[in-house]
Image (cartoon, rainbow, N blue to C red; front, side):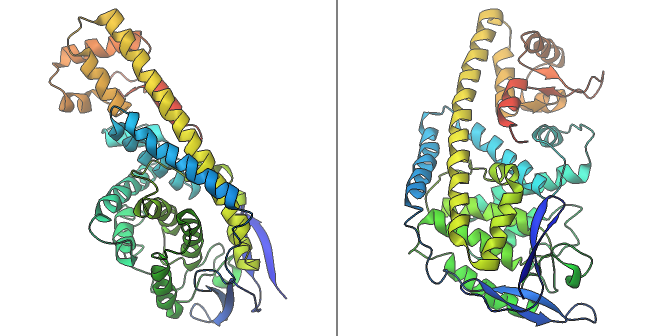
Amino acid sequence: MGLKIIKSQNKTFLRLKVPMKRKNNGKLVKSSSVGPEPFYAYIPNDLPPNPPIDLSELQGLLEKASSSLGRLDGISSVLPDISIIIYMYVRKEAVLSSQIEGTVSSLSDLLAYENEGALGVPVDDVEEVSSYVSAMNFAMDKIQEIPLSLRLIRETHKILMSNSRGANKQPGEFRKSQNWIGGATPLEAVFVPPPVQNLKSCLSSFEKFLHNDEMPSLIKAAVSHVQFETIHPFLDGNGRMGRMLIVLMLYDDGLISNPYLYLSYYFKKHQSTYYDYLNKIRSDGDWEKWCEFFLNAVIETSDEAVKTIMLLLDLFEKDEQLIIKKHSQKIGLLNLYKCFKENPVLTPKSILKKTELARSTLFRNLKYLEEMRIIEEITGNERKKIFKYTSFVRLLTDGD
């Protein structure tokens, strides 16, 4: 008897059929905490994997991933204002990570929402993505004060779930009841994480591993992500929190100095493969294949980010020179353009809050930027207009 791999809504999961002995990855335990019939839940072995992950075949990829990540981190030294890139990349990661969980909001939707605009998408979706941004910003600040820990994860999760959908899902608290993935009951589920009575020991061991210094940081982040998703310690938000954890670990270990790595882009692009590899670890302990997938994600995402940043710098230079050439005498036009560099989706109301432009001057300057095809109005409404720096958003929305 063994495991059955099934597909559900384009995702592949494990159906745990009966208890069986496995080497090096975990075990099934019989449980009856939900409903009258017993079911089997999965408890992963403590980390690090035993026997250790074989890095011999991964060394080339590991070096390439480290190099790509270093190149991305180093590019910050040539940027005139790194805050613009950080601002946008945190939001891109928030959008993509939430889309993996089923939201439909885009980067433009989020930016409009943050500037008191609305593009007709479900408000709950945009609020959920906005909460991710708040949680990431909180965690990046808080990790300066306290170590990467269960406490930091809980406090970050509380903010992540601070929206209408998450309010009743025990935000910031590890679950006190059994959860499962897929199906109406654990018996029908495609995966059942550890029972509540085993949760504390699983998390305690996991926290200890977060500070393991004997494993390369990228491999440690890859392994920790799988373990977190397998433990599934919260009632909801585990996927988003688990992906955020990768960025926090790489930052904490000094591999990146800012949160501009958005691995959710790669995970969403290869979503079924992403779930397949998570499952292969639970079914046969195939850590090496997962680490290969993870390192490829780091390489592709880092290289794409560097390319995008360089294209953005070229775009900013080109458009600024166009404004100077055509409208060098126009009062406040370059300052208005700067607002769109800092946030490429804006409403007149939000711009007036940021600048000292008179309302009549603002709309005149918006018209100038429209005529140069730098921005466009995206609602078609006479009132409650929303303007977008189209080329800027287009560069950032590959995969959005």
